[in-house]
Every structure is written in C-alpha cells, then in structure tokens.
Image (cartoon, rainbow, N blue to C red):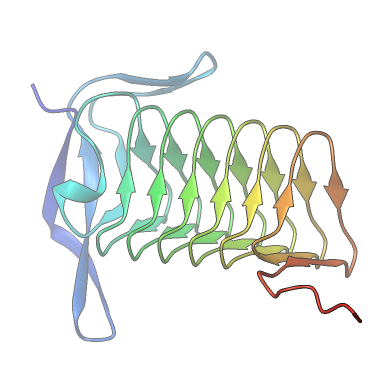
Length: 185
C-alpha cells in the first residue's frame, strides 16, 4: 500500500513551468514519537513521486515544496513553508522547516535541522546533529556537522568545515579555499 497519493486537482504552478501537487496520506505515518500523520491528512506539495519516498516515515507538510530532482527520504520531514529543490537530498531524521531552502546538490541528513530563513545550497552538507537557522547560509562545498550550529546572519562557504560543538553566528563568515599558500623563499 502506498504511503501517500498525489492530488492532481490541488496544485500550484511555479513560473508557468513547474506544477506542484498536494499530497494526502493513504495510511497513518509516525513522523516522531509525538507526531503522527493520519490517513487522509493533507500534506505539502511535490512535483512527482520521485520527490518523496513511499517507504519510511518521511513527509512533506504544511505549504512546503519539494521539486526538481530533489528527494526527501527515510524519516526526514520538510514542513511549513520550506523549499527543497534542484538535486538536493534531505534524509535520515533531518528536518527542514519554516522558510528554509535547501537546493542545488546540497544534502541535509542525520538529525540535522535547517529552519528559519536559512539556506543550504551548492554542494554543501549539513549532517549529524547540526543546526543551521536564522538567516544563515551554508554553501559551496562547505560542511556543517556533528553538534555545530550556524545561525544569525552567518555564512559558511567555500571548502569550510564547521564541526564538533562549534558555533558560528552573528555576521561571521567562515571560508576555506583551495588557494595555495604563498610564501617568501
């Protein structure tokens, strides 16, 4: 039995090109110990079935959008007004909510949370128990992992890695490039 169905009569069109359809649960889905989606509950919007895995407990709710070649799988949740698109993947027990955007080839997985007006894009990875929120941006080939937090107006980009219990916040910018060191001989 399928976990959800696509409602072809409830849709929105983006830029006169992409049509996103609402989903409806075909069975009860336990999102977390305190949240259950019940059979018949209406979810968010997806472009096609490839955007939301039929197995696992993953879900798209509220007015969230998942489209393009993006994928939500395993036990991940995309909710409220969040957008996941491009070739982005949200998996594991990850959570992307509020007005957050995850796009490009970005990955959010593990128990990671991306919310507020945060953006994760390019080839960026947010994993483990990391949080990215507020107006923060993580992009390029950057990685935020383990118990790290990036928030406020902070940016993590290039090849930067923010891990362990690190906190990057305010207007901080963290960047690591592959530029060679120039030394005097």
